Image (tube, rainbow, N blue to C red; front, side):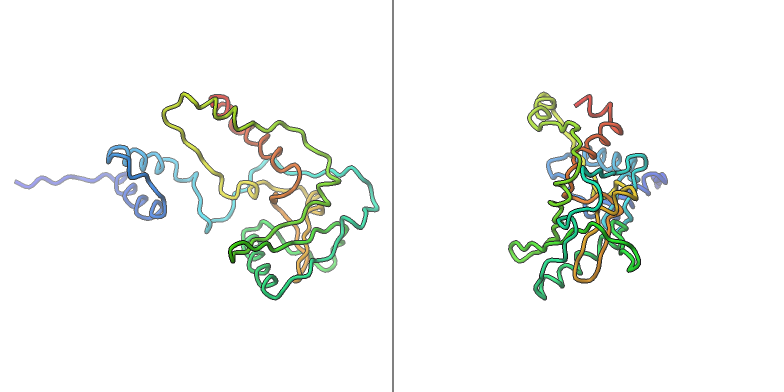
Length: 229
């Protein structure tokens, strides 16, 4: 007598999910088979929540980023500076670093007929042979009206979870870049490199009120989860 074990469509989908979407995930070797299956099932149930670098960035609606300056026009020359001199190696690195945010819709190229009053130069920082693009927003931050929204202290967070047995953490993929910038703020977030002028459509790293804005948004989206620690 032959017994045929039927596999449900859900289990087939889960198996496919584990072999495709989770092939780059690192699952602890300390988990039992039962725990690993439970974790895989949980991730599968919420698979729409996860993203990869190959997917378009989500845009969070209702939490647009604005920038208010404490000065009026005409703006000081300090807010409009030329591109920094760069070596051929750094120029090549800038072009490479500029490609990804352009393709993801994080920045856009400013047209030749658009007025440019405020502009921020870009620096290429090198460490151990690797480069990264640094936006020099120091001038803009000097004239930005501060947002004094409270940022949680890490020690308080540790105290809240000190009695927990299991702790889960999640990291938003390019979290700042999921925040849309208002048209007015875009004019303040223009950057210059040797190959042109670009402006941020999404919130960049390095601006004065970015942490406050992001924390306020997290508190409004996840009030219950954050209150539970």
